[in-house]
Length: 207
Image: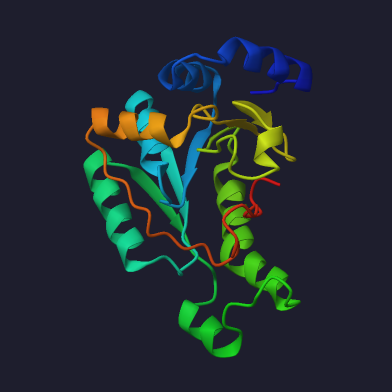
């Protein structure tokens, strides 16, 4: 779906306050190759439930860094089964054990941190996008997560021109808790992203 920045801004005004399901339905209707990405972090189940409720067979791209907590892996397994998700798994080309032996997890100020991030997150993500070539990319970005995400909106264009759709963008945790309770959906807060270190630091996929 090819949209200009002006069209995106106009649609964002129209979509503010619209239920996520309606936004998703609109995007699916106009999309040729939609995908939804996830890392099964807290509240990810909301976007997965909402999108799969509109398009059951949508490709769910999971780029697993290999560093998730045992609770996150169990949580992911539960959600995949509960929602019958069409998961497409992408993992780094090097095993976690190999990388731990030769590099470990570099700190932000370590020159190797950029290489680490490329290996465990960016390269698998680029590989996934090259394979699926989506025109619409559903995400669970929300206002208040990072400074960069505060500059986005429900709809935004990636640097490659893919339309990113974040139907829960204006929702807070309390609203999402209500949504999860309404649909009896599990949540998991024991999540670890080895590339971010700080909670309010951008992960690299959306900047």
